[in-house]
Length: 351
Ligand SMILES: [Zn+2]
Image (cartoon, rainbow, N blue to C red; front, side, top):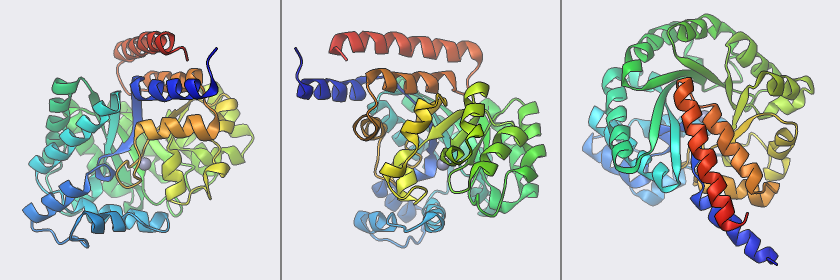
């Protein structure tokens, strides 16, 4: 008979070895401090930090607004297509180490546009870095444009054109993020409709700091089939049931929610409650370097804090594969491969 301790260490090993999907991840929040400093130096960008400890210090923001500010300041280090290729390759390598088989990575086009960078060069640089990681480690990455909603609808139209133009370079999705409090989803309805018509998948950050109205808007008005965070949907009893029935997936980022103050602490996080209500969920890092977390950390947290067992964790991974913004045939193939591999791993480890 297994002891409790043996079961826990088998679950730990399962978490490390299980094939994963990560659907909510920002390129700009995933750059190693050492790389940020090197890029800033190479590009003559003045960062408010001189060494890795200084960069780490910047990550100690007190609220969501400060977080957004730091995020923008650090992204200034990236200038050329070569920079994006380097950070994308490093992130692809990192994902492969976490046994992530498929990921979708958001880039924030507004700040590059405002700095007059060539967005085609940004995307194609990132795509080249991820392609190299795919060749070396077999991790596949799709790109998404995450538009900062506070910059308004007019600019969104302009950047959507760039997203569509770069679909042949791996852009698969259009999203909005940024200041959810002052910028509800509704004004972006037509932009999202156009994105869908062009063949892009769509998603939206919603229900992270604003309540259910924001999630309803993302789903009903923008047509999002995946919602970034969405945790505040718990405040409207009708909403989790609706998401479950419609198969709308919440891409949840537990550590991020604690670090940005979206929840007062993990104990208050609705991850387990939403899972038990049958809402389709994935778990993700959001900004792994900013929040000092990894996919394995997030899965461990789900296991230790929220009591997810191997079957529950496997379900998160399977939901990720089924919700991937891939053509149906490839999505089914990914889900099938993950299922097979996870079943073999569970049998091997007895979890
Ligand atoms: Zn996000």
